[in-house]
Length: 303
Image (cartoon, rainbow, N blue to C red; front, side, top):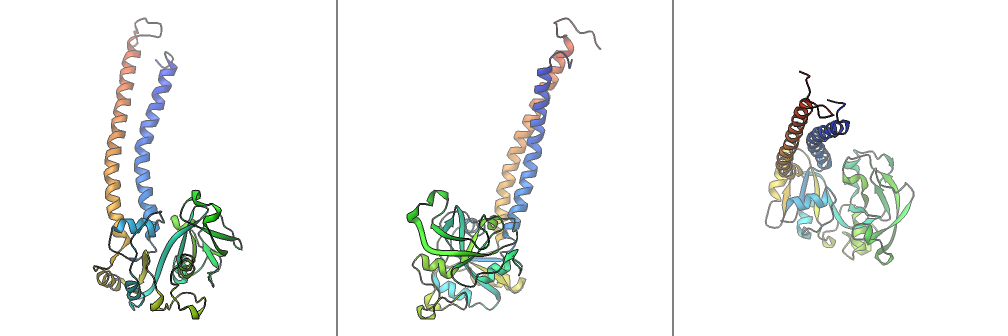
């Protein structure tokens, strides 16, 4: 039977491989997506943002996807920064890119938190013209660059370059998330590049990080908070769930995303099972046909 039509048997083997591989791929990819997304939000305990879709805020702030979200009002930013139940509160600012990689404006506290207190290379930024990059960024320590307004490699035309030049002084350890390709600069500089208040009085000069001057704060897409403990985390989430802001644990968003993934998995598993059933039917049909006749068309007397 195997010698009767080698091409047919080879095709059946390939079909069985495809059907089996499809089923395995669906299960393994779902598991991989869950693990990767959990790693991506692991360092972000609590997010405070403007009222709206927390999924959009998560995709923008934690997964660094291009998009627009409402800005948290300056007065709420002041309240978040003044909260004494948080180890630190770091603003996130976006809007620029470097060769398609996202530029994130934030504070040294968040950089140190992401690095668990120790960078993989170099040091943290100490002035407005320095930057720390993710583990997968092509930028090297000591290299200089200019940021581009907007996101993506299509927006790298010369007239979109900001005038300021940055120097890479540090590299984060691997995060296993989109932050591995992030270019992190002081939030004051990204505010300055977009003609916004820098969080400090002009006469103070290029001051870096907190404490910020409440009179010179601007709106931000999101604030990252590191609560002192679990009780403080739930307390802060309740405090900032108001008409002017929303607060959430990133894991809350992942639960909803996992439900969507689960629905897709059920559908894809059904398709894979159908494919496997068709392959089995084809094998049985071809086996019956091949057992009934030889290659030359004579009856087969093999029992």
